[in-house]
Structure formats: C-alpha cells, structure tokens
Image: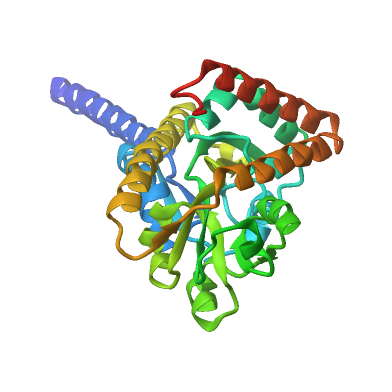
Length: 352
C-alpha cells in the first residue's frame, strides 16, 4: 500500500512538472513569436507605371519575407501628394518612398540632382556608375545623414527625358510658350528656352493634355508615354533629350528602418537592386523598339547644331548650381570629370 502511495505521489510530482514544463514551453514559444512588420510605401508612379518600376520587386520582397514583413504599395498621390512625401515620411505617416529627391522636396542641397539634372547622364548605366564608382553614394549618405527622421537607401536609373507634345517641335523656337508637365529642376532649366513648367497631379496629366491645360510632357521617354497612355493624347515625340536617365531613390522612415531585422534589411536592399536591374532592360529595349515600331507618335528632331546650344546652356546651369553649396560643387565636379572621361573613351560610351 505504501509502495502504491509512493508511486502515485511520484507520478503526480512528475506529471505536474511535465505539465509545468509544457506550459512554460508554450509560454516561451508564444513570447518569442515575432510580430509581423507592415509598411506603407508610396511611389511617385501611377498604377500603370508602377507595374514596372516597383511592383515586381515589392511582390518579390513580400513573398521572400515569408510572413515576417509586408510592404503595402501605394501609387502617386494616393495617400500623400508627391510634393509632401518627404515630410510625411519624416512624421511616420508613411514608412517608405520611391521617388526622385527633387519631386518630394527633400530638404537637402543635393535634391536638385534628383530626377533630371540636364545632361549629367547620357545613358541609364551612367547613374549606377556615378554612385558606385565616383562617390555619389557617399555624398548622398552624407547629405541625408544630416536630416532627422529619414534614411536614404540608395539610388537607381530610370528612362531619358524627352518631349511628348500635341504640336510638332522642329526647332528651339517651337518650345516657346509651351505649357509642359515636367520635374522641378528640369522645368527651371527648360524655362530658359521659353518652356512654361506646369505642375499637376500625375493622374491628371492625360486629361490636362486633352483639355489644353498642357501642351506636352517632358517627364519621361517613349516607353512610359506608351505605358501610361500619354501616347494616346500627344502626337509627337522629340528624339532630343535633356537627360539620358532619371535619377531616383528609395527612402525609409528612420525609426521604422532601424526596427527592421538585419536579414530583412538585406532582403529589401536586394529587391531594390532587382528593381534597378528590371528598369535597365525594360527602358533600354522599350525606347528602341517604340521609336522604330511604335505607331502612335511621330518622331521629330531638332538639328544637332541647334541642340548643341542647349547642351552649352546646361554647363552654365551646372556652374550656377555649383555655387549654391560646397557639396553641390563636389557633385558638379564629379559630373564634369565623369563626362570628360566618357568623351575621351569614345564609342560606345559617348558618340561623336
């Protein structure tokens, strides 16, 4: 009888301990279960364009993050007007942004070089080379390191900046008085040739052309014109461009970025790289194909000798910007050295 009592006593103690251990184990597992991170990211692009310039990489990130993090993608002006994106990100209203520095009014001196800085680049590959091999990564990191609340994550290249217009452009005088949707710095430069820069919400551009509020667009190359529907409301495409590639970046709210585990930070940066790669081939192939096979827009060209005056004016513009800050002067100096080297390298880096 005493043996039975001893057995039951030991069984109760052992069973209780097992239950307690299991309970503690469950509590431990529950306590360690990570909470899913959810971000809201807004791009400068409307829905049709975002399908190419960012959505594939965000979809890939969400899949690879395996439920640990989800990035919800929003399009141009969907949550916040594009011009207010930087401040909204600082406040934490949104968590991340894909845009050029210029359009979102980034409060740094080098924001002027975002978007289309005239003739700084001739081809889309110029942008990653300038950032990776000529010091722009360090300069951008330095500039944004002085701004509280936002982390700059890196830059990439988009398409060239050409004119899509209702009326044909055959000479510089044809630009005078034309109301053109474009980027802030590009507009400042183009105003020297009589262009009237106009700002409207991205989604309103097509209607603004149809109603006559706009005479044209200098916001992209021909690939985007066809993709977003602007080729349906304009008739002519000017083959001369004022920049070979748009320069855009990814940004994140500093606090939200710091809260992301290192492996997910690495994953997001790899997805940014995949987005940069996608755009390289999408634009490069699209620009050539649509110039040759596109049926919606007639191509026009300003003679090379006349267009050279625009390029010469751009160098004066560079020097004016260089005087605005020592950091801007460093960037302009890099552009000059880089373009001089490319010119000496000759074809295919620069064509005569």
